[in-house]
Image 1 (cartoon, rainbow, N blue to C red):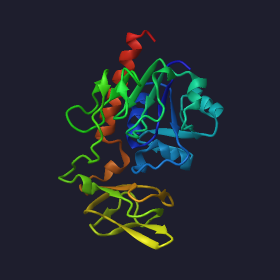
Image 2 (image 1 turned 135 degrees about the vertical axis):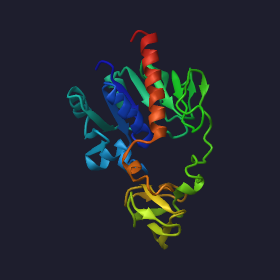
Image 3 (image 1 turned 120 degrees about the horizontal axis):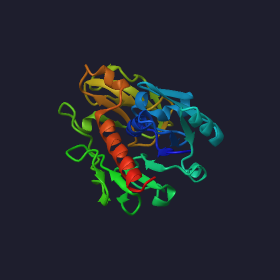
Length: 271
């Protein structure tokens, strides 16, 4: 298919890229794992794995249960998602470009031979070696910058500061087990409030809010977690309710870098 772009990963940051490429008129196929663990589920196309469809803003992503179904959806101008963590469909489809938006902080198998154009987001890749271009994902002056040589800034493990809060915004599982949600995304929560529990053989372990704010991200109910697994995100700006349903500024900025890289390479190489 002409100008086809395959995006590996469908989480909230990947969704910003998928959305922008789709809106620019590119046919896009999303590849995901069988059990995605998106936190900001309202704005993650990966939720189509569980729900069959997922709408983010004005774009709907549809789950395809086979490569043939994915191709049919693409031919109809739709946005399909296929469970294919190893990227086996890439060889069959021969896309114009492959974008690694898994954001695993390491390379899980993407390489330059996959397509005429290859782009990766964040650390774990070296531009000019693993892929053609790397897009910076760390907040700051270089967010969204396209790197043609070298690697993105290493992962700091510290979330960006919002209203004076950084690491407090992100909640990690206090134990291993199965997560059971008490609250839901969009709820206003108070510091110390139980927002979920982790069920395991030792009993229920409460997951408490780390600050007052708006619960804008929470992993889906029933998901198996390990201790330390990222499970929730609180926005201290209680009035920012609509942010629970829209693509973030960070995701849009990164998406702009991806579009820049794809169009530059497409023109430079006469593709």
